[in-house]
Length: 233
Image (cartoon, rainbow, N blue to C red):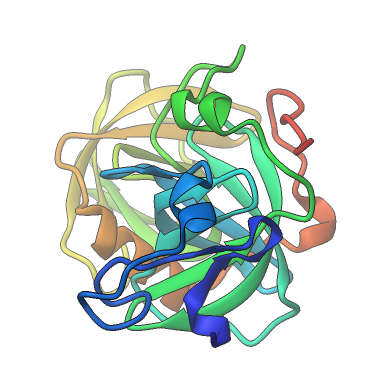
């Protein structure tokens, strides 16, 4: 058994699905078949590392580990990372393997799988946001101004700008390497503006943009803006 076959090493479970385990036709041992595991069709998430934040899709999870779909190679950093779900809950993970756009992680401590899958939390579920530090151009009323994008999701962005813009004012955001995005101003506070997009990104395009743009956040500054996340165990 190689590291690439280990998705949940803490439970002794070996993945025998196509592309992640032994050749087709192999049969899992009885203790492996009885190990508690779930398959997820799609669950957007992100990985927090010392090099920044990276969007992914959580596909499989068990008490001892999980598998995610990637849209780019992960940076060469420490194997310990943090998996954050759309509702803000966080789980410490350790990378075991990465290949063919997927990666397997173990949980240092068993996690409440049903809770994780249901994303039961006092915080509302929302589009996964990535903290970034990107210069962009904002157009409004025929005037263009350079702004700083501080976080980005499929549905909107938080930017920093000295421009005065009214709530619900229509604007256009030009991100480097991306098509122009029509948006409305949702809120304004202390030099920051919240934008809601009228068109949405594909999640994979957003993931690749965030990875190429880099992140302004380090692992030491990962506290959630609006509350504390649930720890594993």
